[in-house]
Image 1 (spheres, rainbow, N blue to C red):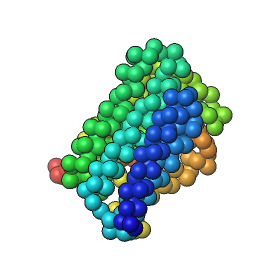
Image 2: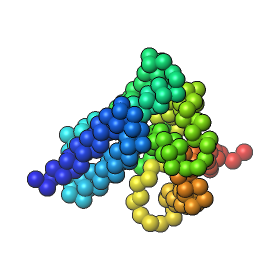
Image 3: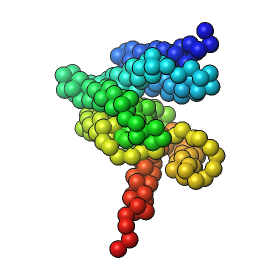
Image 4: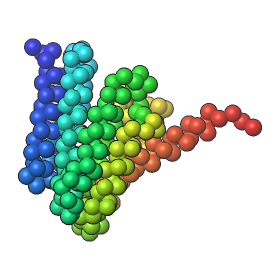
Length: 237
């Protein structure tokens, strides 16, 4: 029975994604964002529980991907659809634009499950990061004093660009660091420590308005790290 704890947490992740989807359909995008955040916590917890209890299984792995498609693909896609319609876009084009997120998420997860090079880092943006990017704008618009987020979330052009950008970011082969920490030493965790410091600083300075900036920092640190690694590996003239 204890061995089923990770799968139970995974199913709760899926339920959180389903709840987020229902909330967005009803127009409660802020509640949907919090449901997705709960799903992120459960997504972390199921992996931690599986390692702690040594309860890895092929069923658990497949179930985890199915839950992630719902919580980090369909739910943020539904939020984007809701925002696009509210921003004045017609239903059919709004659906086509928002559908990029769940479609790219499903494809990205299928690639991830069959790619042995993504054990310690990612190739392309992970689906939770993509989902967090979407909800970061929702929460920043709702809980910060910055008018720019209200303007952006009310712009069908910006929301369309956001959907397309996230779909591309999930499918490109650019290396992006994982937040999984195997030790507390600096070497090997440089990106994670720099990112953690950036998150703390941004939250202190901008509070809720920092949420979208956190994802920008994550992408920037990944890109700079990639350039640094390539420069270190390139032969001297």
